[in-house]
Image (tube, rainbow, N blue to C red):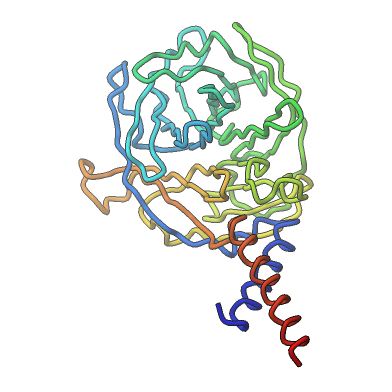
Length: 327
């Protein structure tokens, strides 16, 4: 590596490390892939997976899960959209009539939590491919009221300090809550309070939320406390603090112009995954309409890159010392 190039790389790595201390920096991100998603017939005969509305990452499985707002079940997929399995939902005794699943998060060990928009309720279940999750067996009501079709649009789990959750409400009004949830048969206990008034973000709607505590490069920094906030109405992804300060943003307009982006998640390497529901504007035949997985990546140095750069710097120092002695 030439001396000039090494110093440029070191400067870039140092700049990234400094910026990562307080921000993921969405300005660095670009689309690296767009993939079509399969749809399935649910146990009730309904289609699942067309209107993709929420996605979550399972680090211990190296896969993603997503739900459609048809509410018939959950689909496991690879990071490039290949179907790995499917599990149906049984809504008996939940009180839900629309089964409008708009939020999804992964707790680890095959355990997920799915959110129902209109009741603002959440349900915990263990994933088993080909099985059926009886959602009423482990649930909690966050609102204790029927919110309607502008209710819960996203839920995300933060595994730190015993575990906590963040949820967002779509509109009328928008809301963002943080706190703890306990689940039980017949209903658990929600201890959730408003983090900040999201109207300050200037977003038309709130469509999903994702915590950043699981991103390796952010561990031990203030940025690990930040959140990703997705807005379908504004075609925007924001990175914000838990007090509502905007740290970075990404314009999503034009990525999939015929699909509505409704879900966001992130993996331990900082790769962001979005899901969008199928084309519903007549741009394709209904038989060809599909939900989409959109992958966003940023070129950031891996730990081994830092090691290489530091080793190179040490080598340069040794060469400089030898030259001095020789002179």
